[in-house]
Image (cartoon, rainbow, N blue to C red):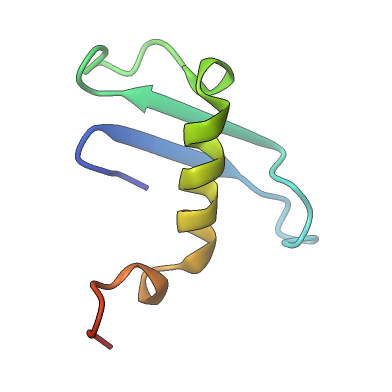
Amino acid sequence: MRTDRYRFVVWQDVRNPSAPPVDVELYDHLKDPDETVNVAAKRPKLVERLLNQFRQGWRGNLPAGKS
């Protein structure tokens, strides 16, 4: 998943999709455009927010009033 600043990768066990992710990757394109440093461990609150956004899927991320 991409935002205007980050790329967020969720490694999920497809056999158990309700389980926590196996791993996550978070890259800050402002500071690291080549994606060489995974900053997920340093940004746990951002990871949590992005994971919630990811779990909503594309429909859950539409602007208010859109369907």
